[in-house]
Image (cartoon, rainbow, N blue to C red; front, side, top):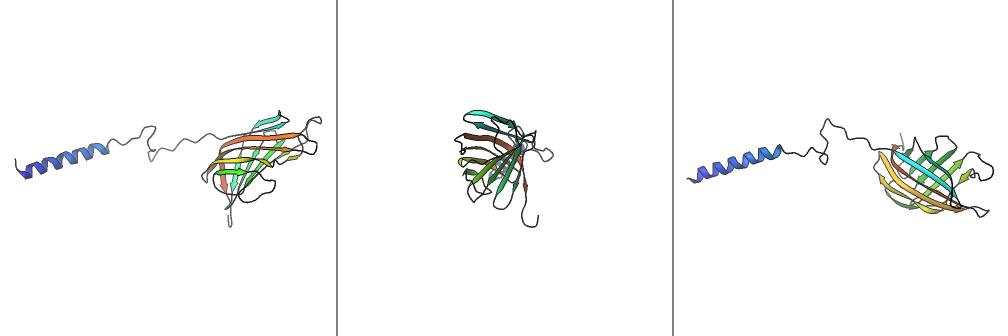
Length: 180
C-alpha cells in the first residue's frame, strides 16, 4: 500500500468515529436538559418552631414563604397560615454563609424575630421575640431562591428560655434596589 492510501483510510476512520461520537450525547437524568425541556421546579418548604423551656409552644409550616434581596441584605418572611405568627429574618449580606445572630440589623450578621398575636394567657408567646444567641445558616442563595436553617435562643426578664428554630428551602427571592 502506498502512503496516500494509508492516510485516506486513517482519515476515513477518524471522520467516522467523530460522527458516531457526536450522536452519543448524554441526555439522560445526569445530562443537561435539551433546549425544549424545562428543569423541574424544586419544592418550596419552610417551617418554624417556637419553644419555651424545652416545650414546643408553636410549630408551623409556612405555605407562602418569600424573600427580598437588596444589594447588601436579604430579608426572609415566614408567616403561619393562621396569621397569628410572623417570622422575619434579616441577613446583613447577599451571599451564602453562616451568620451569627444579633439584636440589631448589621452587616455580616443576622437578626431573626417572631411577632405573635395575643393567644392563650397562661403560656402565650410574647408579642415580639428576638433571639441574640444562635445563627442563621444561609446554605444557598442564587438570586432566584434561597435555602437555609436558623436556630436562636433568648432568656426573658422572668428567666424563661425561648428557642426559635426552623428551615427554609428554595424560597423565591425577589430583587429590589435603587430604581426598581
